[in-house]
Image 1: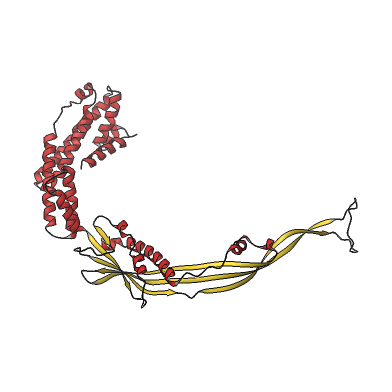
Image 2: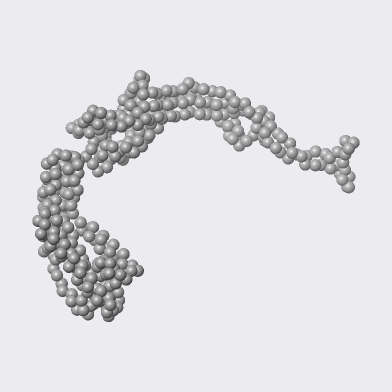
Length: 386
């Protein structure tokens, strides 16, 4: 609360930019008019118009606040003390702002110091008492939403008093009651025996990064903790393709600049005036035959990410998931004029055949992709469980 009041006070001060104090006053923005006038009167204490505006704005701002406090007190509601505290704090901040003005200005506006400390202390005490009592009542409901409200009200108590009764203990209890717990697990419906490393890779998913206030994910069951939801990665198919090697034949060609002798109509080499043979530029096409070998192997895992509500034993949402991993390698040999080869073919000439990765490695690499996809879906759906 104190921080909020400070921010509001600073914001009011900064917002008093180009608009005149008179304009602020006419709009009923008394505190902004006061800040503007104070700024000017500190520099020029004899500005009569600013003194008049300050006098009226200061009086009306305080009058408005006191009327609001009177109304709140008359309501008899225990929840009003937070607003009463805030209003008295604003009045004190306003008074402090004006009190630093030159004596002639204070005399002219009829300034009289008012000690708001007792009212502020009383409002603070009663506000803390109200939020503390109300939070305890909310916690007695043993309801998640009520516990979350209680948590925020206990934080208000701490904003007034750092060590108020057993507030810290109640905060921990409110957090526990208000938190939704979701357990992530994996289910194998592929009719295949999956290596234990696969499950270990999937469960490496770092859901802690997705945890938030009132939302907790676990990948391992915590003893004694009730899970409101279970998120199941239900794998339905794992397929690894056969190892494939195929050859592709193609020819790279390139246009290059060459020359030939110029011939006359009789087929004789023509001479220039100095008796030298005449050469002419010509374009010619060069080529090189390429045999490219292509290795290919693929793995695909498909399934669903199912959200189970453990209270109703029903699936409340299902998202399809598909992850793919490919092994591809290319190498080539060439026959002909290497100057005709493209840059890409030159790179392939440097490659060599590679051993195919075993099926287990293909599946593990696909699992790593699946893990990241699953995390993204869980993050996208966090509103469902919260």
